[in-house]
Length: 99
Image 1 (cartoon, helix red, strand yellow):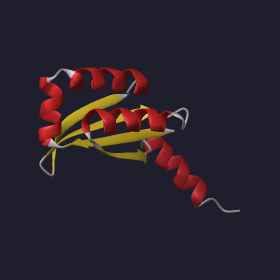
Image 2 (spheres, one colour):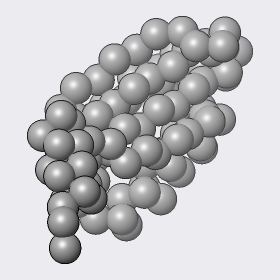
Image 3 (cartoon, rainbow, N blue to C red):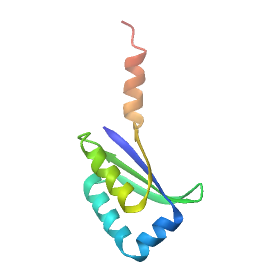
Image 4 (spheres, one colour):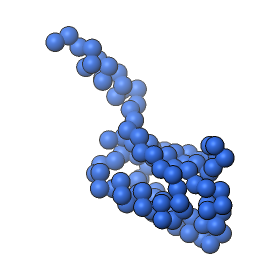
């Protein structure tokens, strides 16, 4: 299932992780686990924020991803099922198909 991982890092916690070198290790592991289709980073609500689009092939990856970010940087995490235009069109076609 195509998924959006959104994570927000507290500024101070993220800064500590960057200074001690653990942040780059966390991100490397995260990219390895998710093999993202795309990833973007910015600021939202005053926090460092990441948006990673990836294919969640097995729900057992959820704890691996979550704990990596929780333990490593005290992150707030959202995992959101998402669709592209083709998925949306197919879903709408099926939803409104005459039976």
